[in-house]
Image 1 (cartoon, rainbow, N blue to C red):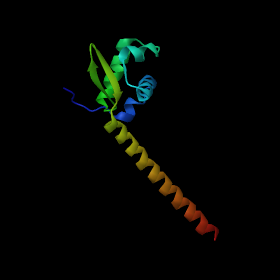
Image 2 (cartoon, rainbow, N blue to C red):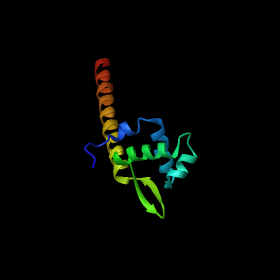
Image 3 (tube, rainbow, N blue to C red):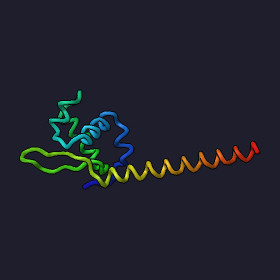
Image 4 (tube, one colour):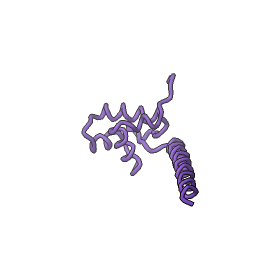
Length: 106
């Protein structure tokens, strides 16, 4: 049982996890397929996938003796919402500065 929730942004801060996340975004795949494309071992890929799963960014389902990983739409939507809030605040701040500059020039 997990006693903590991994922050998705922190999980994606690691370059290997980001590469894994990007590969899974292209298509769902098993650990062995992901490891084949990266310079890390299968056990290392499994550990990275565990962190991404705990962060709510990926999910898995069984397919015979393998587990197939795909993006978790709920986790990805939460990331997108964070970015939208950040972007909206940034645009609002830019607008205030632009309007203030226009008023000072008048």
